[in-house]
Length: 133
Ligand code: AMP
View 1 (cartoon, rainbow, N blue to C red):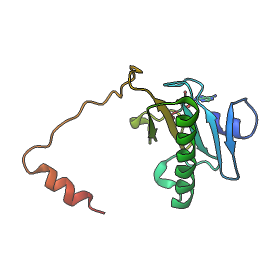
View 2: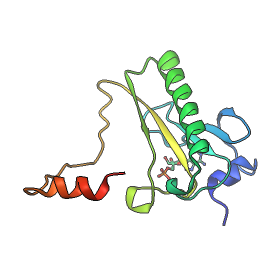
View 3: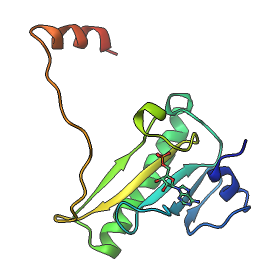
View 4: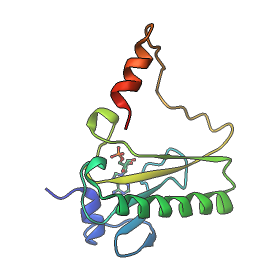
């Protein structure tokens, strides 16, 4: 079944478009964390971040950088969160690769829900060895 983003790309449902080229579409998120929250969407469907070719990711990140610059210039935000929710366990609702670019303000009252943990003795070394690229 087509995702909401495919339907937007195909013009079947409306969106507020900020930019479009051959491979990406940028729209405003309909339920923003802060107003101006934008989504850089791959036109080709990659359900998972890890499936996307590096060249397409690079183009999406360049586009996200342009969006972040525009948010700062036009909204005067103090910062931005640039994030990808990859997989349902990570909060991804729409299985179609997209980058969130969220304008942030010093006192906007928004917080990530993460609480941090600690490594047991020696465990960080094990993780380091297992995950070295
Ligand atoms: P994610 O949880 O990373 O998959 O993010 C999906 C995002 O898409 C959410 O922030 C939604 O608010 C947003 N969204 C869902 N439907 C629409 C829509 N029709 N137009 C714009 N944004 C949407």
